[in-house]
Length: 280
Image (cartoon, rainbow, N blue to C red; front, top):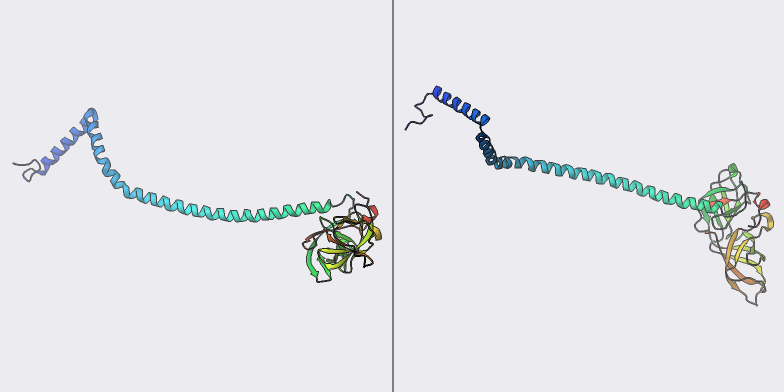
């Protein structure tokens, strides 16, 4: 049996038959519905092969997207970490500034007296030993301060200026053994003197008679006597009373109201505060 495209058929005849069949298929596909059905059927049969052939590309594409997503997430993570650190630092700074602002507000509102000579000072260093309690601040004669001016913090009296330099000054704390502060008891206006004994958290009242009306918990404020410390600033709270009749005077101890062991910002009161001060 001789095949159409066998060795006995010439190449010209085979070409002619192929062209005729192609024309018939084109015309049938164009003008009949059967061609569409056949094409659809063939596409359906070929589709799995196409999907199978596309698997390597899809796998590569998914891997590439996964790597890209991973790199992008890593970059975003690093960016967010850096941003978090910056925001954390800013938050800490904000908290610091908020605390500082509250301290400044408390300092400036520590008294109802009006004065335009008050100055905010920052503690630069602490120079204290067992009996000598002083701190150095960043204000001096160039800022218009002078020796003897009273110094307070946001809670109460701290001490007074000594050894004023051009740009720095020393503050003699009220707990220094050479410091004395005229005070009065807020409850009954009895006047007395508070003296430092070399302890940062304790002062002593000098020459207190046994019959003096003083109680534990009494608040001591500056009396204004001596024209050194303006009247009415909190100084200390009475914590201990020893009325030993064998001694000429009672021993009375008090705790400073100002936080002398952690002061950082101070207010230097103006020299005219004593002149214009009035009791709140």
